Image 1 (cartoon, rainbow, N blue to C red):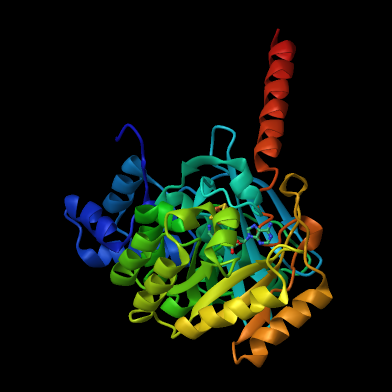
Image 2: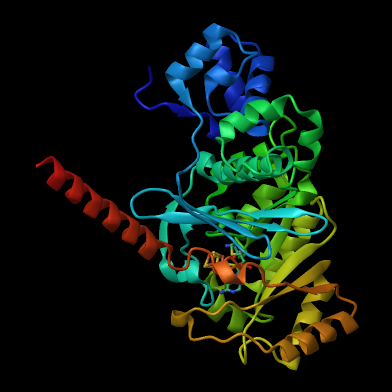
Length: 399
Ligand code: SAH
Ligand code: SF4
């Protein structure tokens, strides 16, 4: 028995093949194992019925399949779901599922906190706590997919009964082929939760490769999006290692303003960032970069800013995604009015730039982008406090 069990959620295909190979297993055993874990959502090795008994017992002795524990989960009236995961030492991260007519998008986190410190971002205001492991990153997808599959099955098979563990479901589900097609509710993954994915490169790369793997989540490169504040050297690495769709958080059309809003701009100014976008496009699965632009009242939303953006758009093939700012008290910033956003987006569209305005979703559960884990640390501390009090109460009862 290893001192610490190996969490198989963090192993991509080559790593799993190597592990299985150490026990004399052929590569197809690793693929079988991947399908049990990621596609059927099974975490108990004794339920993986087509694996040899001896192999299962080796797995049970040395390994685990373990997502971070869920602290809270919430459902919005618009169908948005949010999970808050405990990643230890008072830190928590969030994932949000956003269902739409033609797709289901899961927004996941890559770090607990973030040290880029963008002025308009509540994660940035929290500071940096730690990088997530590959198991913690993929664990968010594994968990959300399992929960959503379970929901789909309970509403179809047992409308009156919402009980039953996910594992029970997974075993039933594995023999239900018709169920398999319509439970693939997560069609897209975006790394737009907490943290800067390109400052936690290796675990993010492992997780992204698992998202694309046909024996795991089988998503196409176009449906996995990494969002970055502009870590130029890592954009180049990603273009070589595993090019997926790229979103770049622009937020300002010139260096003076971007230096203030996204401090990383001082290290990688706009000229370098735009050149990196152009290089990325040579390898990208889509022929455009998505520029994210948070609309901040009186800060970056004037007609002149729009004109400057149009110049930028002439340099890189791009689409714009205008994001209504989600205010939080410490930011001292305000959301641009709906009328201003409309005029701004019209200016861009008149110049031939494809522009969308992000709908705010899950407002009633604080799940909109950029609001992720705003008060997570406090809430986690609260939970710890409650746990402490519970321990004291238990001790008192025992005494
Ligand atoms: N660190 C990466 C990915 C996580 S942030 C990045 O910056 O791209 C995901 C998106 O949410 C970014 O575009 C970010 O600018 C935006 N965002 C952050 N805080 C926000 C807020 N308060 N309101 C609206 N969008 C916000
Ligand atoms: Fe970090 Fe992105 Fe927030 Fe900036 S916007 S602080 S890079 S998470």
